[in-house]
Length: 250
Image 1 (tube, rainbow, N blue to C red):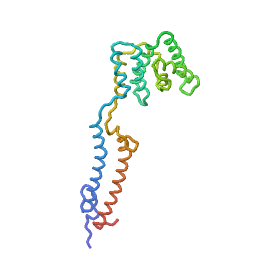
Image 2: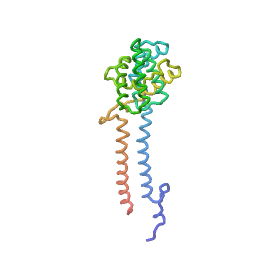
Image 3: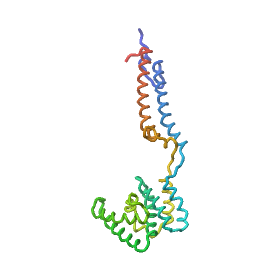
Image 4: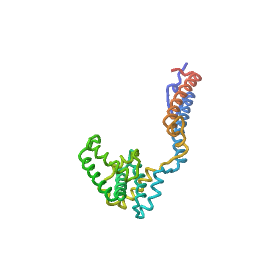
């Protein structure tokens, strides 16, 4: 029996046998399924997403207009500061945004505190800053003691409950050098930061929970992995079927 030269010629893009063509078409089909599963879902997320503000943003927005107009009412400044501290509690914050947020809470604390409270704030803050300037270890006893003295005072100034962790955040973010003024430049950066960190795109795909996970997380982290393994298994099964059909032997 004479051998056909094409029996040993393998080309994915220009297959020369029915078996090779079937294999190529199957690979293309599976790649398309995989691409649609990944990119189709991402497109669907973008189409369905809707900017949704967090409660902290709504609180900030309800008072910011009056603050921008020049009001230094303690009640308004407390609400704005509480919202700013919610942002400062996040993991990744741009340094420029952090500086503007620090400026806002420092300036607010200075304007909220009155009389003896303001003098006590400056005393405890400067003491803490002097210790923080010479140690990088937050476990240092002097550092912790100075910080713990500052926290209850900040809870009172910002109107935070004793169990609210934002007072601990405030103790390391507030700065005596940022108290005297809140510049127009930092006000603009502050507004951008509040919108950036407190407004998130959400939809039914992110709000729905499936097997205890947000659906979009389950889909991308679990389902797509299962789908990939399933496609690999199906490829092997169908390849064996085609090999038997066309008499191909390994």
